Image (cartoon, rainbow, N blue to C red; front, top):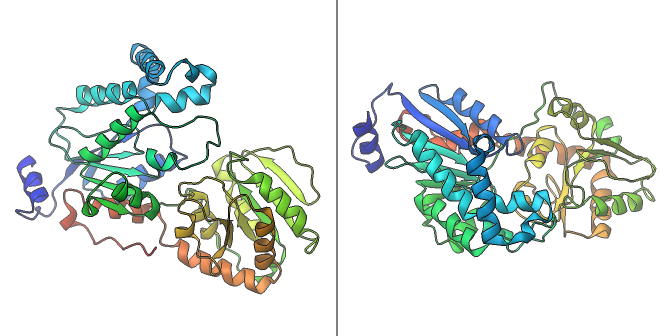
Amino acid sequence: MRDTVNAVNTGEVSPKQGTSYRALFVTAGDFSHINAQMLQALQSEFPNVEFESFGVSERMQSEYPALFGCVLGTLREYGFSSLGSRALLRYRLFRSKAFFETVRRMLKRRFGDRGFDFTVQTQSLFSAALTGCPNFVYTDHVARARLADEDQDGTGQPSEVWLNCESEIYAEAEHVFTFGPKIRDFLLNDYGMAPGKVSAIGAGASVTPEREVDSSQERYGRRNILFVGVEWERKGGPELIKAFCQLRKTLPDATLTIIGCAPDVEVDGCQVIGRLPIAEMAEYFHRASCFCMPSRVEPFGVVFLEAMQFGLPVISTTVGDIGAIVQDGVTGRLVAPRNSAELAQALYQVLADPGTCREMGRAAQHRGRQFTWEAVVRRIAAHAPGAAERPAAEELRW
């Protein structure tokens, strides 16, 4: 089996029909529900691959000496200011050389002789590369892109030491898959990766409709704006409130529903729901007329894909890869970040005429169909051992 896989990787022979494979799926945390969705799609789409999953952060929490060593290493690398807040320590710990090397030793000790045919990891916080085993990385962000972002959460920037560790992840990878084209371009231009080793393959929606989406003009005429986000300020919540107040002067029947966080806002027509279980969110997408999350910083934004699945026009900003998801003037509107006046105008342009809103919603739903976790894992598997046995993956249209 190992000889066959090695031959496949070098292009010497084609894999035998019916060959089974073993793969390791390595994660850190739940990654905003992404890891569970991906593993389910991997197991569903490729029954000839036996996937074993391993969570490095969960394992670290149960190995106190290793965790303590990582904390000490983080303090040496970043300084005692790392103890300023839990969020700051967490951010730096996961981007420290101590964590990087601890995870490498952990994976080698636990899986180094298990004979996996390939490994898949989500996020670029560690390297899941095992000796003689191709590793595939799927990530929404890279550290050098962070250097250009605003420090919205007070966690600062990655260290030079970490930047070197992160470069090792990509150097050891068989292929790196990014959510969107902007991060792909960072890997090409700032990390010097070869074009043939990087692909922008999109993402999928964690919340999807389980009943038919209402595409009636009445739905879009209700003018209910939906916001879904945990980090109110980073997701542009303050700008949305200002824009909404301005919008109500011309469209007094417009309403706003806020899910995911509970900001202290007292504005007519605004309802704050707060955090909800993922199973309860679909109904709010069904009720909405459009989706608006005017992010200040956003690597990609899976929630935009979710909104599109429900036939919602998306109003957002031009940061990150949002412009690769939302087609300005077709599936929604894009404005500059932190500009509440432009945002109010964009909301008016989408909501003033229910027919226009409906047309954009239909276009968004059509575009959203290519963003699924099944499509994502097929694009990854097209580069993995046994690719010739599997149907060709649909190319993503950016």
